[in-house]
Image (cartoon, rainbow, N blue to C red; front, side, top):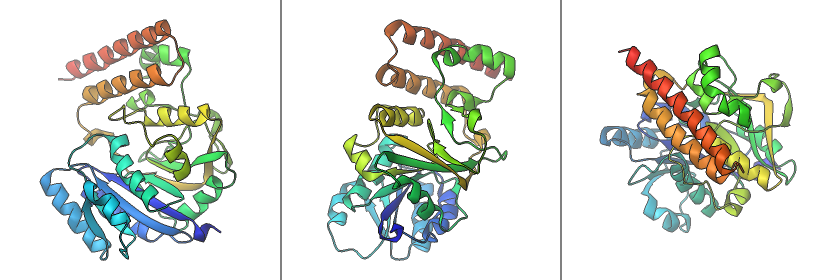
Length: 314
């Protein structure tokens, strides 16, 4: 049954041609499904864009390189390929960039889409086929994910949305426990630490997950109101509001080669996160004005602490 399902892997790239070079062979090796691969370049620097085209052409010899304006025309043509590289004219962020690939997958009549960052590594050649079994188990399930191990060997899945009190006390938590920057993006669900089980999850990491194409079309695709960060919280909220489910499969795993130390200025990144968090709270949390005001004040304190830390390290 799974072999008849058409699944697209959407890889959103920005100045990461070397990572795409590593993930493409692993995606091409996937078996047990009808598989399309859509790499979307989010306006990388010219040298990186040129390198990406070379990488793509080397791995996908019959692949097709196109602009975002050509997608509809290409999808309606009779091209005999399952690999595409879409070159965006500008970088509008994670959600908008992925939407380019997702909408193309929808035009290709794909049943589901694997959203996968370039720095993810998938060694299991049946990874997508096995993950799709959970996704299509019941119509109530619209999103599925696996264990994702980072460079420190920690599992980044599943995630859990913080309560109001937990979020309000983030500055205190930072002082008492010296938590990492990741604590701001979404708490790991420590209550479900066993990897060898399958269960309904609260939230999954945005670095690698499988999602229903039908569901994405019903919600008009990813919310482009944020440039970066908090996409997981937004997606989780939209799924819950419709009474649908997210499944975590700990039998499967991928590796996340993300290195936070090469991502630039921490304060700038967390400032972007703070803006995205405000958007999420205003549009999806259900909190009233004064609750959001309190959380905003807490975020400002938290950012001030990060800034002072930056200044003191100079």
